[in-house]
Amino acid sequence: MSIFELMGQFDHEQVVFCHDKSVGLKAIIAIHNTTLGPALGGTRMRVYKSEEDALLDALRLSRGMTYKAAVAGLNLGGGKAVIMGNPDTDKSEALFRSFGRFIEGLAGRYITAEDSGTNVRDIEYIHMETKHVRGLSVSLGGSGDPSPVTATGVYCGIKACAKEKYGNDSLEGLTISVQGVGQVGKYLVDDILTEKPAKLYLTDVRKESVDNAAEKCRQAGVEFEILDPSTNDIYTKKGHIFAPCAFGQIINDETLKDFNYDIIAGAANNQLEIPEIHGKIVKEMNILYAPDYVINGGGLINVGNELLGYTRERSMEHTKNIYNSLLEIFQIAKKENITTDVASNRLAEKRMVQLSGIKRVYLK
Image 1: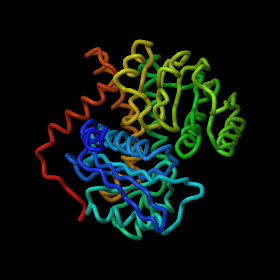
Image 2 (image 1 turned 120 degrees about the horizontal axis):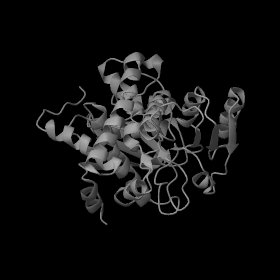
Image 3 (image 1 turned 45 degrees about the vertical axis):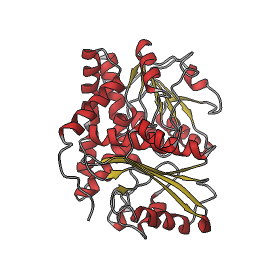
Image 4 (image 1 turned 90 degrees about the horizontal axis):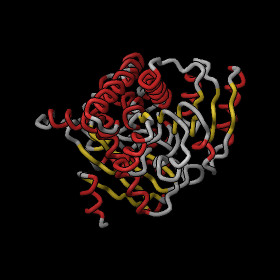
């Protein structure tokens, strides 16, 4: 497909390609929809196999941000940026400041924050060139790392899934797999361990991350097993809850072959490889799926609250409402006999249609 055909497929408003050879910057900013307000979404940095893969990632992620903001009740649109590069070796102040100038050129249509592969320090470099940044450190008047708030939302969402599936939202005695125990997953493990689950399966591409999570399990007296992330072992383990907290598109034909969980509920974006197909397969397998952009909405809620004058208490209370949002989505799905991801899309689209006539608001 051509770029415009891809934009049409995902219904995007704007895609910006950013290139600065002098600092090694190759980035893409995707603005999906600004019906409810300026597009807000983090900047991701990772190694992509191709420029096409990077573009598709930006398009999918930005579309998810539109729906995430709408379901969460935020007056924000959906956007996302990806920087092509190795986050361990390719970062520099010059690279992020160059990228910040591209964001400044969008005049408030896109607001960025940290994401996978970037951190608060990177965002501070971007902020040197543009005011259209959220998730800054507390010392600069921001809310700091949104990962703990995202994890709280995922934890509340997991409890809502348990309530729907088992009639009780306690996680005590359940077997839970956490795929990816880094930025968000490490905080999710902390929350889960407060309820004494029966066992945790842990996996991550970074040995340090998985070792830290394993040590927390030891200290809590909870049984655990570390699995090789390069295999499909985590998908074939028999457990109650599978919490994907790494990269997306991991619910697919291959991983569903021997899938042995009742619930899929985690922080990763775009978990269903092909939503129209794999959402239906998951439903037919009687697996309860928490739509990813709903359950992982805490990070967006956190940075979105900065626009109102940030307080952690208000942000956490707003995030905890993910529990109720998911229960509402589950009820819609049952009543209309549709998949949970379609049910959540309908909720988001309903709000966007209702507010489509309002004046669009951008940062001054």
